[in-house]
Amino acid sequence: MTTTTVPVSGSCDPAEAPFPIAPAVPSAPATTTPATTPGATTAAGPVRRGVQLLLGLLAFTASMAMLLHAGQGAMPWDVLHQGLARTTGWSLGVVVAASSVLVLAAWIPLRQRPGVGTLANVAVISLTIEPFLRLLEAVAPHPGPAGAVALAAGAIVLNGVATAAYVGAHLGPGPRDGLLTGVVARTGWSVRLVKTGIEVAVVAAGWALGGTVGWATVAFALGVGPVVQLAVRSRLLVPSGSLTAARPPRAAGAAPSPRTTTRQQGDVPGASGADLPRPDADAPDRVARRAAEIARALDVVRAEHGA
Image 1 (tube, rainbow, N blue to C red):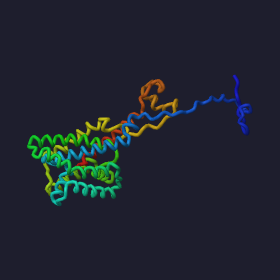
Image 2 (image 1 turned 30 degrees about the horizontal axis):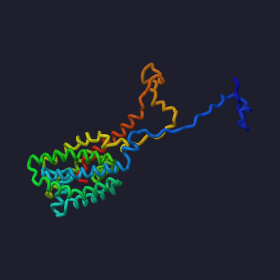
Image 3 (image 1 turned 60 degrees about the vertical axis):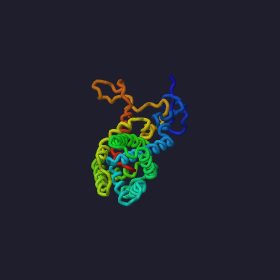
Image 4 (image 1 turned 90 degrees about the horizontal axis):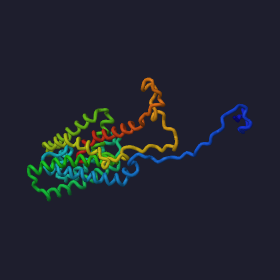
């Protein structure tokens, strides 16, 4: 067997080395493989997300109009909008826009930042709520008791699906969503406590101003959450790429991390870590991150009533 030597100083010519070393092995050129996270580049592309945001907001506005036209009680924030419209004589669209601007002003001390979806939320809902109400008035001017129940039930289901759609686009929260999350972040109080406090306050103020409170208000508060939970499971409404980032590229042939391929010795008594395969440890982390985002969305979207 031949050996090579390395000099103590000077040239690195193997022929001059004073002690033996193993011959160098040529390394293969490193190549990279593209990210493979489903939907990271296609399902959650900017055009697709923008279209989903717009359709989700239109459906959300339609659900608002359906519940208002049913006359059995509005969404919590719409109780306030309705009361302000009756008191000021302004149209509902103007009231929604004005209240949204005031809520956005409250973001400043809370250090919240609006996104494209935030501005779209204000514009789409305030501009389309009146046309939707006129359309319903033309189609069903007097829905009657059965029609009112059908409108209210349909509004709750549609609102849950629409909420999942525009939140799943992941382009920014609505004004009232941001108010909720901002207060939670600044105070450390629970989402449930803050959301309940805000909704009770706006319903009380709206009712005092002449807004409609009824069984549909309670049904909406209790029923829209489960609908959203079902809707966000759809990859069509919540693409994986809109909530999770793609994994970074890895060199082809590179050895995986030991914790992703083997168990730590001691996990199973008497077993060697190299003998036991271990599931990809990154998978639970990705699931946990996505579950946390969806859980946060589910907590905050119910505060989005009218914007």
